[in-house]
Length: 249
Image (cartoon, rainbow, N blue to C red; front, side):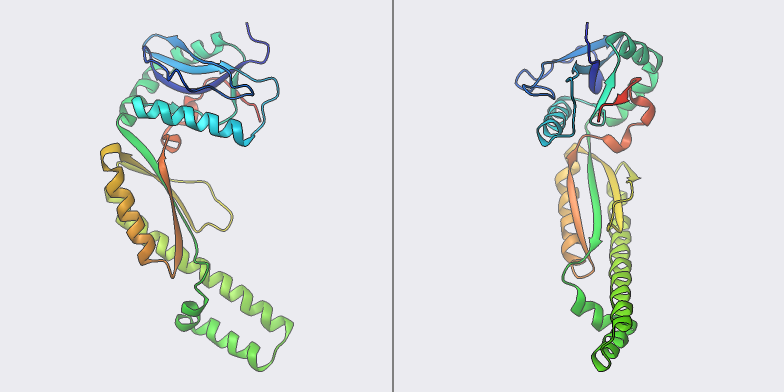
């Protein structure tokens, strides 16, 4: 019986063997186990008494999911999902069994790759050469330095850099979308002009990354394209997949 609840990492097919050299969250790391219901199971551990989004725990959560993903399809849970007890986990698994099985089938042999587009850091020279409005405001500040003129120039530069990054992001998205099984927009990120995740066949991940990196080089004067992955398929699991849980952080 647990006093702090059950920490839920993922949902997998029942009968899978867990990595024996990977622990869960907490310090020291807690042992992980499965809670099964028919053909599916949740990967869980005892929930720490005071769970916080510490680097150690975030890495432990991510490492376990990556190890599981290496060996079969996984429905990953976000960090900090805690269920009151094992019976609650089993109840939810049984209630959503068919949906979980369908998602596991969809994710089999696949990984997630995330792409973000940020304004290029050293693009002012190229921007001035291309943007008449920025060029005009810059000359105005040079001729008559004033606070208001400098503010207008700063705002114009920021707007133009964001617009250029968004355009580059959209071009990259058009090129990469046909290479993916599915694409999902990500949440808004401050300063980010594009945030998208791609569901990729694991066998195609190297070629997908190579294409994305080539695009990053091609558009480097317009955007900084940041690639992350392969990742657990967070973006392709419905929020309803989470067992009846509460965020522990």
